[in-house]
Image (cartoon, one colour):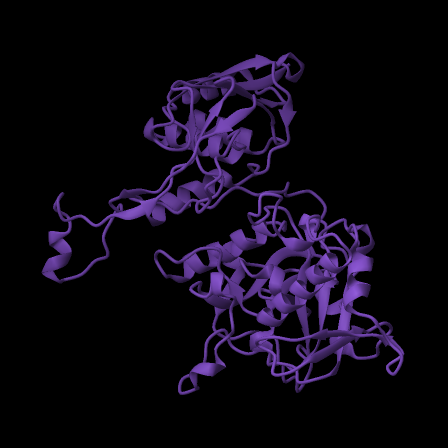
Length: 478
């Protein structure tokens, strides 16, 4: 026998977002979301000791199998709603804004999905002791909603078997782990009115390190032309990507550029799948480093090699013809922010240490950013805790294990020698700022040092600009 949690969405819809800033609905709801609902019901009941013991038993179990039907996502138009709280100020106009007709409105989206079957189940392989089972049943009975407060549910624990479920099981994206209950309690103590709840871990705590992006890099070294400062390399990476896509058009595949190269799905929208990344190879991390850029790297996603990408070799050879004078293939880039033609060529077995992928892929506990991380969303509270939480989430979004935010340090300056600061120093001219692609220009930039608590292979590329060379990290070794 196993432990089964049955959840019925009473209104026939589930209102929940997969991520705080996502427009995609969370279906089926992940175990960490359901566990948070159980903890909330337990706390509202007076935090009974036997119920806490049952929840601590549940958080130690292996991730459950999630059985849920298919679903249809509804459109999520912008809804202008009053913010939950206003920024404190002594100005009279601040207090006037609490009046119903004066309250400001902020655009919000509430992702909604309609499951084909409003009843779903989660199945844990282990069955608890009778006393713990009764405690879990009582807590589940008092859950009123999961996700948004209008996403009303009926929940009950029962004994059953995974084989008896009517819908196929899926693997949980986010799991619950020992200590999760204590994390939720701490978040509530820090801010009882509006606690900041970090998502559960995306990988089991006892699993092997997550797979890194493939070390099968194509490193291109500069052999001619003026190389822009490291601060402008994100724009150069975009020029390099456009050149590769031009190669696809030249070989007759303009309408069949792989999603893994273009970064867009067949409908033209940005893909949600990992795709080809471009990164600068700079003189950094060594004594007397000055951040000079020696070349660029093309980095395929995890479990993928460049030879696996359809048409990649033919497209690259079309834009990088063989140069008899150089006795090698040469790719010439032109266009802003370049001052003139920039000539790149496959580095091959180069002896330049700055062109070696090793510092970016060798497993280590601690990683530090060479290029600043572009945060995935705008700041709300603008405090250090929020910054560390966003960096932890960026690790998770990049397919890495979520580090403990207390093991993350953020700031203006990089821990890597030769890397420029994320923001200009006092008195420096405006042009010393990082050149960020227009869609990301308003996002905050920061450097970070991240201790994953265990050896983690690279490359570690974080944030909204990780596919164009921003958020590139280098391993730190003691």
